[in-house]
Length: 384
Image 1 (cartoon, one colour):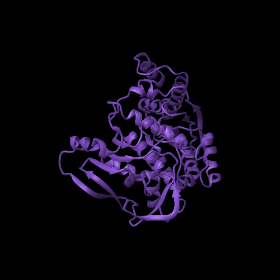
Image 2 (cartoon, rainbow, N blue to C red):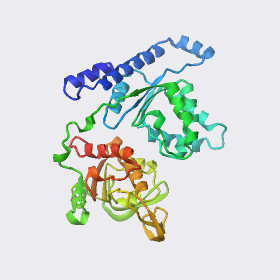
Image 3 (cartoon, rainbow, N blue to C red):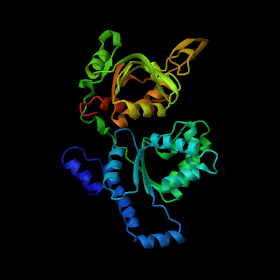
Image 4 (tube, rainbow, N blue to C red):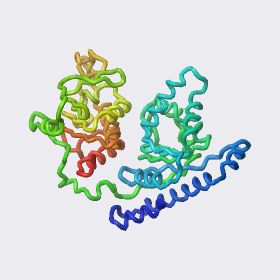
Protein backbone atom coordinates (compact mmCIF):
# COMPACT_ATOMS: atom_id res chain seq x y z
CA UNK A 1 0.00 0.00 0.00
CA UNK A 2 1.39 3.41 -0.99
CA UNK A 3 2.43 5.96 1.62
CA UNK A 4 -0.44 8.29 0.73
CA UNK A 5 -3.01 5.47 1.01
CA UNK A 6 -1.61 4.46 4.40
CA UNK A 7 -1.67 8.08 5.50
CA UNK A 8 -5.29 8.63 4.39
CA UNK A 9 -6.29 5.42 6.14
CA UNK A 10 -4.77 6.62 9.40
CA UNK A 11 -6.66 9.92 9.06
CA UNK A 12 -9.94 8.14 8.28
CA UNK A 13 -9.51 5.92 11.35
CA UNK A 14 -8.79 9.04 13.42
CA UNK A 15 -5.31 7.86 14.31
CA UNK A 16 -3.99 11.10 12.77
CA UNK A 17 -5.30 14.58 12.10
CA UNK A 18 -5.00 15.70 8.48
CA UNK A 19 -1.91 17.89 7.99
CA UNK A 20 -1.30 19.57 4.63
CA UNK A 21 2.49 19.36 4.87
CA UNK A 22 2.38 15.69 5.88
CA UNK A 23 0.09 15.02 2.90
CA UNK A 24 2.54 16.66 0.48
CA UNK A 25 5.45 14.75 2.01
CA UNK A 26 3.58 11.44 1.58
CA UNK A 27 3.11 12.19 -2.13
CA UNK A 28 6.82 12.99 -2.49
CA UNK A 29 7.72 9.68 -0.85
CA UNK A 30 5.47 7.77 -3.24
CA UNK A 31 7.17 9.41 -6.24
CA UNK A 32 10.54 8.39 -4.84
CA UNK A 33 9.30 4.87 -4.21
CA UNK A 34 8.18 4.55 -7.83
CA UNK A 35 11.60 5.69 -9.09
CA UNK A 36 13.38 3.18 -6.86
CA UNK A 37 11.14 0.30 -7.88
CA UNK A 38 11.52 1.18 -11.59
CA UNK A 39 15.30 1.22 -11.23
CA UNK A 40 15.20 -2.26 -9.69
CA UNK A 41 12.85 -3.61 -12.37
CA UNK A 42 15.63 -4.04 -14.93
CA UNK A 43 16.46 -7.62 -15.85
CA UNK A 44 19.56 -8.98 -14.07
CA UNK A 45 21.47 -9.36 -17.36
CA UNK A 46 20.67 -5.81 -18.46
CA UNK A 47 21.71 -4.46 -15.06
CA UNK A 48 25.06 -6.28 -15.20
CA UNK A 49 25.82 -5.00 -18.70
CA UNK A 50 24.76 -1.46 -17.79
CA UNK A 51 26.94 -1.39 -14.68
CA UNK A 52 29.96 -2.46 -16.71
CA UNK A 53 29.78 0.56 -19.00
CA UNK A 54 27.67 3.22 -17.27
CA UNK A 55 28.22 4.76 -13.86
CA UNK A 56 25.27 4.08 -11.55
CA UNK A 57 23.54 7.46 -11.26
CA UNK A 58 22.08 8.04 -7.80
CA UNK A 59 18.37 8.64 -7.40
CA UNK A 60 17.75 11.85 -5.49
CA UNK A 61 16.60 11.20 -1.94
CA UNK A 62 14.60 13.31 0.51
CA UNK A 63 15.67 15.29 3.57
CA UNK A 64 12.69 16.07 5.85
CA UNK A 65 13.03 18.77 8.49
CA UNK A 66 10.68 20.34 11.01
CA UNK A 67 10.03 20.82 14.69
CA UNK A 68 9.44 17.93 17.05
CA UNK A 69 6.25 15.91 16.72
CA UNK A 70 5.44 16.92 13.13
CA UNK A 71 5.34 13.37 11.76
CA UNK A 72 8.69 13.11 9.99
CA UNK A 73 9.69 9.75 11.44
CA UNK A 74 6.17 8.35 11.04
CA UNK A 75 6.17 9.15 7.30
CA UNK A 76 9.64 7.75 6.78
CA UNK A 77 8.60 4.54 8.53
CA UNK A 78 5.46 4.25 6.35
CA UNK A 79 7.72 4.63 3.30
CA UNK A 80 10.24 2.10 4.55
CA UNK A 81 7.60 -0.51 5.39
CA UNK A 82 5.92 -0.38 1.98
CA UNK A 83 9.12 -0.17 -0.10
CA UNK A 84 9.37 -3.56 -1.80
CA UNK A 85 13.16 -3.73 -1.92
CA UNK A 86 15.49 -5.99 0.01
CA UNK A 87 18.57 -3.75 -0.13
CA UNK A 88 17.27 -1.13 2.27
CA UNK A 89 18.19 -0.10 5.81
CA UNK A 90 16.53 2.13 8.40
CA UNK A 91 18.90 3.29 11.15
CA UNK A 92 19.12 6.01 13.76
CA UNK A 93 21.81 8.48 12.74
CA UNK A 94 23.78 8.02 15.98
CA UNK A 95 23.84 4.25 15.41
CA UNK A 96 25.09 4.83 11.88
CA UNK A 97 27.95 6.99 13.16
CA UNK A 98 28.74 4.34 15.77
CA UNK A 99 29.13 1.80 12.96
CA UNK A 100 31.30 4.26 11.01
CA UNK A 101 33.71 4.68 13.92
CA UNK A 102 33.89 0.90 14.30
CA UNK A 103 34.70 0.52 10.60
CA UNK A 104 37.34 3.24 10.88
CA UNK A 105 39.02 1.09 13.51
CA UNK A 106 38.71 -1.97 11.26
CA UNK A 107 40.26 -0.10 8.31
CA UNK A 108 42.97 1.59 10.36
CA UNK A 109 46.19 1.90 8.38
CA UNK A 110 44.52 1.42 5.00
CA UNK A 111 44.36 4.07 2.28
CA UNK A 112 41.18 6.16 2.07
CA UNK A 113 39.15 4.45 4.80
CA UNK A 114 36.06 6.58 4.07
CA UNK A 115 35.94 5.16 0.54
CA UNK A 116 36.19 1.65 2.02
CA UNK A 117 33.33 2.40 4.41
CA UNK A 118 31.21 3.76 1.53
CA UNK A 119 31.96 0.62 -0.50
CA UNK A 120 30.97 -1.57 2.46
CA UNK A 121 27.59 0.16 2.72
CA UNK A 122 26.98 0.29 -1.05
CA UNK A 123 27.52 -3.46 -1.27
CA UNK A 124 24.66 -3.96 1.19
CA UNK A 125 22.08 -1.22 0.58
CA UNK A 126 20.58 0.90 -2.18
CA UNK A 127 18.27 2.87 0.12
CA UNK A 128 19.39 4.27 3.47
CA UNK A 129 16.92 5.87 5.89
CA UNK A 130 18.43 8.08 8.61
CA UNK A 131 16.26 9.04 11.57
CA UNK A 132 17.27 12.10 13.62
CA UNK A 133 20.05 13.53 11.44
CA UNK A 134 21.70 15.77 14.01
CA UNK A 135 25.38 16.66 14.38
CA UNK A 136 26.90 17.99 17.60
CA UNK A 137 30.17 16.05 17.71
CA UNK A 138 33.20 17.58 16.03
CA UNK A 139 34.64 14.18 15.12
CA UNK A 140 31.42 13.26 13.29
CA UNK A 141 31.23 16.69 11.67
CA UNK A 142 34.72 16.39 10.21
CA UNK A 143 33.97 12.96 8.72
CA UNK A 144 30.59 13.56 7.15
CA UNK A 145 31.39 15.47 3.96
CA UNK A 146 33.81 12.89 2.62
CA UNK A 147 31.71 9.99 3.84
CA UNK A 148 28.36 11.17 2.41
CA UNK A 149 29.94 12.15 -0.90
CA UNK A 150 31.54 8.71 -1.20
CA UNK A 151 28.33 6.86 -0.29
CA UNK A 152 25.81 8.86 -2.29
CA UNK A 153 27.99 9.08 -5.40
CA UNK A 154 28.03 5.27 -5.44
CA UNK A 155 24.26 5.19 -5.91
CA UNK A 156 22.88 4.98 -2.38
CA UNK A 157 19.64 6.95 -2.02
CA UNK A 158 19.27 8.79 1.29
CA UNK A 159 16.05 9.58 3.13
CA UNK A 160 16.64 11.54 6.34
CA UNK A 161 14.66 13.24 9.08
CA UNK A 162 15.94 16.16 11.13
CA UNK A 163 14.68 18.89 13.41
CA UNK A 164 16.59 21.53 11.47
CA UNK A 165 17.09 22.40 7.79
CA UNK A 166 20.44 21.43 6.27
CA UNK A 167 21.80 24.99 6.45
CA UNK A 168 21.41 24.95 10.25
CA UNK A 169 23.14 21.63 10.91
CA UNK A 170 26.11 21.88 13.29
CA UNK A 171 25.35 25.58 13.73
CA UNK A 172 27.94 27.31 15.93
CA UNK A 173 29.99 24.10 16.00
CA UNK A 174 33.76 24.10 16.20
CA UNK A 175 35.45 24.43 12.79
CA UNK A 176 32.03 24.60 11.13
CA UNK A 177 33.58 25.87 7.90
CA UNK A 178 34.90 22.34 7.35
CA UNK A 179 31.35 21.00 7.75
CA UNK A 180 29.81 23.26 5.10
CA UNK A 181 30.56 20.84 2.20
CA UNK A 182 28.26 18.35 3.97
CA UNK A 183 25.38 20.81 3.61
CA UNK A 184 26.14 21.22 -0.11
CA UNK A 185 26.14 17.45 -0.56
CA UNK A 186 22.73 17.13 1.12
CA UNK A 187 21.29 19.76 -1.22
CA UNK A 188 22.87 18.02 -4.22
CA UNK A 189 21.62 14.52 -3.46
CA UNK A 190 18.35 15.20 -1.61
CA UNK A 191 15.12 17.08 -2.14
CA UNK A 192 14.70 19.20 0.98
CA UNK A 193 11.11 19.20 2.31
CA UNK A 194 9.76 21.05 5.35
CA UNK A 195 7.18 19.33 7.57
CA UNK A 196 6.61 22.08 10.05
CA UNK A 197 2.92 22.42 10.76
CA UNK A 198 1.64 24.39 13.75
CA UNK A 199 0.96 21.42 16.04
CA UNK A 200 3.08 18.84 17.85
CA UNK A 201 1.10 15.73 16.92
CA UNK A 202 2.59 13.74 19.79
CA UNK A 203 0.82 16.07 22.20
CA UNK A 204 -2.61 16.33 20.52
CA UNK A 205 -4.12 13.73 22.83
CA UNK A 206 -2.24 14.94 25.88
CA UNK A 207 -3.49 17.62 28.24
CA UNK A 208 -0.26 18.62 29.97
CA UNK A 209 -2.14 20.34 32.79
CA UNK A 210 -3.95 17.11 33.74
CA UNK A 211 -1.40 14.53 32.61
CA UNK A 212 -0.75 11.95 35.32
CA UNK A 213 2.90 11.01 35.07
CA UNK A 214 3.54 7.29 35.10
CA UNK A 215 7.33 7.33 35.34
CA UNK A 216 8.24 10.84 36.43
CA UNK A 217 8.28 12.16 40.00
CA UNK A 218 8.89 15.79 40.96
CA UNK A 219 10.96 15.87 44.13
CA UNK A 220 13.79 13.98 45.78
CA UNK A 221 13.82 10.23 46.15
CA UNK A 222 14.18 10.51 49.93
CA UNK A 223 10.87 12.39 50.10
CA UNK A 224 8.79 9.74 48.38
CA UNK A 225 10.69 6.50 47.78
CA UNK A 226 9.20 6.77 44.26
CA UNK A 227 12.07 4.96 42.56
CA UNK A 228 12.45 2.49 45.43
CA UNK A 229 8.84 1.41 44.99
CA UNK A 230 9.24 1.10 41.20
CA UNK A 231 12.46 -0.86 41.48
CA UNK A 232 11.00 -3.22 44.09
CA UNK A 233 7.97 -3.86 41.90
CA UNK A 234 10.06 -4.59 38.79
CA UNK A 235 13.15 -6.35 40.17
CA UNK A 236 12.64 -10.00 41.00
CA UNK A 237 16.02 -11.63 41.61
CA UNK A 238 19.80 -11.36 41.30
CA UNK A 239 19.82 -7.80 42.65
CA UNK A 240 23.15 -6.01 43.14
CA UNK A 241 23.47 -2.76 45.09
CA UNK A 242 26.00 0.10 45.00
CA UNK A 243 28.37 -1.40 42.48
CA UNK A 244 29.51 -0.52 38.96
CA UNK A 245 29.28 -1.74 35.39
CA UNK A 246 31.95 -1.41 32.71
CA UNK A 247 30.99 0.22 29.41
CA UNK A 248 33.64 0.91 26.79
CA UNK A 249 36.38 0.21 29.34
CA UNK A 250 35.05 2.75 31.86
CA UNK A 251 33.17 2.18 35.09
CA UNK A 252 29.74 3.66 35.78
CA UNK A 253 28.49 3.46 39.36
CA UNK A 254 24.92 2.30 39.90
CA UNK A 255 22.59 2.24 42.90
CA UNK A 256 20.88 -1.05 42.09
CA UNK A 257 20.82 -3.47 39.21
CA UNK A 258 19.35 -6.74 37.93
CA UNK A 259 19.86 -8.45 34.59
CA UNK A 260 17.51 -6.09 32.74
CA UNK A 261 16.88 -3.16 35.15
CA UNK A 262 19.40 -0.61 36.39
CA UNK A 263 19.19 2.45 38.66
CA UNK A 264 21.64 5.38 38.53
CA UNK A 265 22.15 8.69 40.20
CA UNK A 266 21.96 11.38 37.51
CA UNK A 267 25.51 12.63 38.04
CA UNK A 268 26.95 9.13 37.63
CA UNK A 269 25.31 8.85 34.23
CA UNK A 270 25.59 12.36 32.82
CA UNK A 271 28.29 14.35 34.64
CA UNK A 272 31.38 12.72 33.18
CA UNK A 273 32.55 12.54 29.55
CA UNK A 274 29.93 10.11 28.26
CA UNK A 275 28.84 9.78 24.66
CA UNK A 276 25.92 8.39 22.69
CA UNK A 277 27.85 5.13 22.48
CA UNK A 278 27.45 4.61 26.24
CA UNK A 279 23.68 5.09 26.05
CA UNK A 280 23.44 2.78 23.04
CA UNK A 281 25.15 0.08 25.11
CA UNK A 282 22.79 0.65 28.05
CA UNK A 283 19.80 0.33 25.71
CA UNK A 284 21.30 -2.92 24.38
CA UNK A 285 21.54 -4.38 27.88
CA UNK A 286 18.60 -3.01 29.90
CA UNK A 287 14.83 -2.76 29.37
CA UNK A 288 14.27 -0.28 32.21
CA UNK A 289 16.51 2.50 33.53
CA UNK A 290 15.81 4.51 36.71
CA UNK A 291 17.52 7.87 37.38
CA UNK A 292 17.55 9.79 40.67
CA UNK A 293 18.16 13.49 41.26
CA UNK A 294 17.74 14.92 37.75
CA UNK A 295 18.39 18.65 38.25
CA UNK A 296 16.88 21.68 36.59
CA UNK A 297 19.17 22.86 33.80
CA UNK A 298 18.74 26.55 34.43
CA UNK A 299 22.03 28.07 33.39
CA UNK A 300 23.12 28.59 36.99
CA UNK A 301 26.82 28.13 37.68
CA UNK A 302 28.03 25.42 40.03
CA UNK A 303 31.53 24.74 41.38
CA UNK A 304 33.76 22.97 38.89
CA UNK A 305 35.13 19.68 40.18
CA UNK A 306 38.04 17.41 39.58
CA UNK A 307 37.78 13.67 39.79
CA UNK A 308 39.87 10.99 41.40
CA UNK A 309 38.52 8.30 39.07
CA UNK A 310 38.15 8.18 35.32
CA UNK A 311 34.37 8.15 35.09
CA UNK A 312 34.04 11.38 37.07
CA UNK A 313 31.51 10.09 39.56
CA UNK A 314 33.58 9.68 42.73
CA UNK A 315 34.63 13.30 42.99
CA UNK A 316 37.72 14.27 44.91
CA UNK A 317 37.47 18.01 45.24
CA UNK A 318 36.50 21.42 43.96
CA UNK A 319 38.60 23.55 41.64
CA UNK A 320 39.07 26.73 43.63
CA UNK A 321 37.26 29.73 42.20
CA UNK A 322 36.12 27.95 39.02
CA UNK A 323 32.45 27.66 38.10
CA UNK A 324 30.62 25.91 35.29
CA UNK A 325 27.07 25.41 34.08
CA UNK A 326 25.16 22.20 33.43
CA UNK A 327 24.94 22.43 29.65
CA UNK A 328 27.27 19.44 29.21
CA UNK A 329 25.04 17.37 31.48
CA UNK A 330 21.98 18.62 29.58
CA UNK A 331 23.51 17.50 26.27
CA UNK A 332 24.16 14.04 27.65
CA UNK A 333 20.66 13.86 29.11
CA UNK A 334 19.22 14.77 25.68
CA UNK A 335 21.31 12.02 24.07
CA UNK A 336 20.19 9.55 26.72
CA UNK A 337 16.48 10.34 26.25
CA UNK A 338 16.84 10.20 22.45
CA UNK A 339 18.41 6.75 22.58
CA UNK A 340 16.01 5.29 25.12
CA UNK A 341 12.98 6.72 23.33
CA UNK A 342 14.10 5.32 19.98
CA UNK A 343 14.76 1.90 21.50
CA UNK A 344 11.62 1.70 23.65
CA UNK A 345 13.53 1.60 26.95
CA UNK A 346 11.37 2.48 29.94
CA UNK A 347 12.85 5.51 31.72
CA UNK A 348 11.76 6.22 35.31
CA UNK A 349 12.90 9.54 36.75
CA UNK A 350 12.87 11.50 40.00
CA UNK A 351 13.62 15.13 39.13
CA UNK A 352 13.93 18.49 40.81
CA UNK A 353 11.22 20.09 38.66
CA UNK A 354 8.44 19.26 36.21
CA UNK A 355 9.24 18.09 32.65
CA UNK A 356 8.11 21.42 31.23
CA UNK A 357 10.57 23.27 33.49
CA UNK A 358 13.61 21.00 33.22
CA UNK A 359 15.57 23.24 30.85
CA UNK A 360 15.58 26.97 31.49
CA UNK A 361 18.82 27.87 29.72
CA UNK A 362 19.18 29.32 26.22
CA UNK A 363 22.01 27.52 24.45
CA UNK A 364 20.22 24.17 24.11
CA UNK A 365 16.59 25.32 23.96
CA UNK A 366 16.17 23.99 20.41
CA UNK A 367 17.58 20.55 21.22
CA UNK A 368 15.74 20.28 24.53
CA UNK A 369 12.35 20.89 22.87
CA UNK A 370 12.63 17.41 21.33
CA UNK A 371 13.73 15.94 24.65
CA UNK A 372 10.79 17.53 26.47
CA UNK A 373 8.28 16.26 23.91
CA UNK A 374 9.67 12.75 24.19
CA UNK A 375 9.61 12.75 27.98
CA UNK A 376 5.93 13.69 27.88
CA UNK A 377 5.20 10.92 25.39
CA UNK A 378 7.08 8.40 27.53
CA UNK A 379 4.50 8.97 30.27
CA UNK A 380 1.75 7.40 28.15
CA UNK A 381 0.68 3.90 29.13
CA UNK A 382 1.12 2.87 25.48
CA UNK A 383 4.88 3.59 25.62
CA UNK A 384 7.23 0.66 26.25
